[in-house]
Image (tube, rainbow, N blue to C red; front, side, top):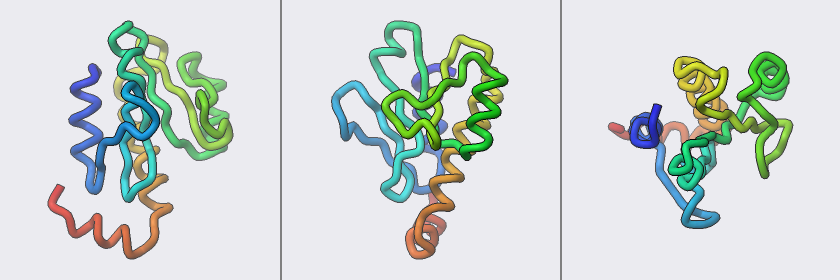
Length: 123
């Protein structure tokens, strides 16, 4: 997966928008106004890309013990976020699954009203 594929994949999900709320380097994808994926554009350019993804706390612990490329979330709540490194032992298929898991966790945490508004969009 390259940055363009990540960008297109995340934006193909219902209700997703892109933001740079912290600085010009950190690309953030949100659903319903809540973050589910963060990445550093500079790290992509340097060839060392990673994603910060929300994760169920128990699953996060299991993933960290199974994969060297899954670490506690950098600058995030270590309980609820993982930093997942590309070019490591996490397959492209697993990366997609982890992005989907993060999106679904955040989507499910939204209010009923916001979820219904998102479901109505054609995205």
